[in-house]
Length: 57
Image 1 (cartoon, helix red, strand yellow):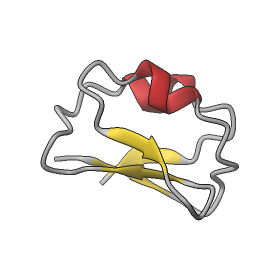
Image 2 (tube, one colour):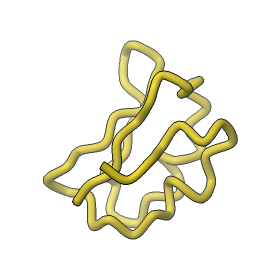
Image 3 (cartoon, helix red, strand yellow):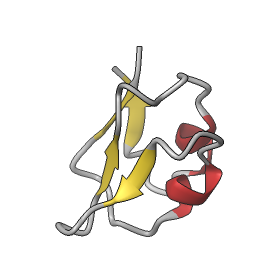
Image 4 (cartoon, helix red, strand yellow):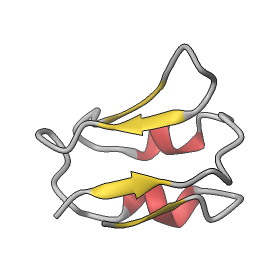
């Protein structure tokens, strides 16, 4: 199960740097996007998000 990004995302990029497999990217819209096919569901992104915008799907 991958993680999802909620509307609380501010596009800070903390999650992008925390992902060990590069599944999280801050997109053109200025919010993070999780590639569900790459995500290994480790929760590293969830743990570093300052707004709590990343949650298990």
